[in-house]
Amino acid sequence: MVVILKGKTDKAQMNNFLNWLHGMGLETHLSEGKQQTIVGLVGDTTRVDMDLIRALEIVEDVRRIQEPYKSANRKFHPADTVVDIGGVKIGGGHFQIIAGPCSVENKAQIVEVAKRVRDAGAGLLRGGAFKPRTSPYAFQGLHKEGIDLLLEAKAATGLPIVTELMDAAHIPLFKDVDVIQVGARNMQNFELLKELGLLRKPILLKRGLASTLQELLLSAEYIMAGGNEQVILCERGIRTFETATRNTLDISAVPVLKHLTHLPIVVDPSHATGISRFVEPLAMASVACGADGLMIEVHNDPEHAMSDGPQSLTPEAFDRLVPKIMTVRAAAVGVDA
Image 1 (cartoon, one colour):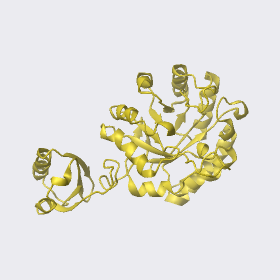
Image 2 (image 1 turned 120 degrees about the vertical axis):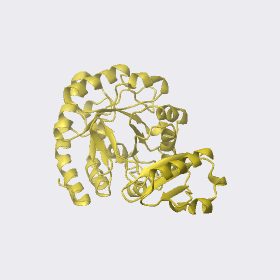
Image 3 (image 1 turned 30 degrees about the horizontal axis):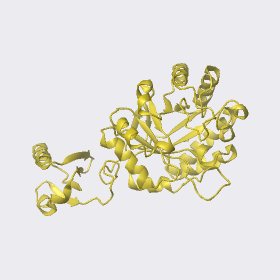
Image 4 (image 1 turned 180 degrees about the vertical axis):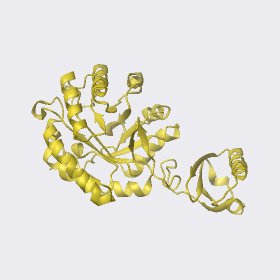
């Protein structure tokens, strides 16, 4: 349920109203805009008398929310959320490219790639230290050493780092990581999501392999219900009957999520296709339909990459792609390229 307050509401009246709601065992989520203030009610609202609230002097309207997600719901929070990552902002008109290798392999590799993607225009560096692999015999990542190497690349370039967490027991290792990524396989690892809700650190939440958008938003809700509202959603392709690409990029997810939620949305065209030649057109299509960012895999030697080489761009290809992305964005949202 949301309560829309009248434009010029006295602070004392608002505080009395909020205290009254809290007295009924409800939590409140306040969203203050230039024209109006919206109070979202979380809890058992079945006992709330809508007509009584609507009759209050400071109330303009009362509406029930049918969707099971509340904090992530745009009806609760009409303004776009802006996630600030050490001064690098995403959402609410701020666009970022997250780029780097699938896996951190060694210092020379991650530092070289970090410098190349920074110079090309990326705002954040990605790299896997813990790698969830389908085969137990595949490269699983360097673990703590991989995080240490990412931090060295950050020191060399100034780029905030994004890397995947697989187990809540590893959270202490991520103390200096700027953005924690939850991979597709862990999107519904609810105990992990609860732990991330206790942090005050941005979380990049990838859509599951066969998850609906509502399931994605409910996973975001798990994190936000714990108090961490710094959530970035990521569409990375879903599993369908098509086998021409690794996954099928659900391009419609971007405008649909823009309608349903205030959270920033990035697209990962690398995992969506699994084939480097298709990354460019899908990256541009994602930007054209309103994505707040892109996550693109870049490797300095894709043919010898320890994971996901076929979908990785070379630094030279990334150099050529970034200006095209910015040109499309300028045309789509009316900003300078």
